[in-house]
Length: 116
Image (cartoon, rainbow, N blue to C red; front, top):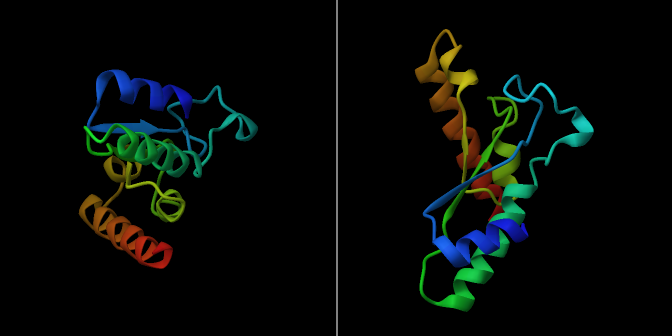
């Protein structure tokens, strides 16, 4: 969290990718107990929101959860405060990637409404 806040203060990025949220083939070296987890993106977003408010110069950047995201878990980081998710494998390897994207979008919208 502190590295995100520090980089925001210095560079003012528009967005962050935060993870690894779940087990993923992209990082086979990480075991379940080494993951950052699905709550970290929301924690980073909350910290950045406070920093942006303190600085009154820049809007809060968008925070995307990344790492092992698929249809079954995409709503979890959003429930914990992430703005959205970044996915690769779950869409590119799907038989119907357009439907997977639609389903994931709907699941995240439902999670967003429930969190508000």
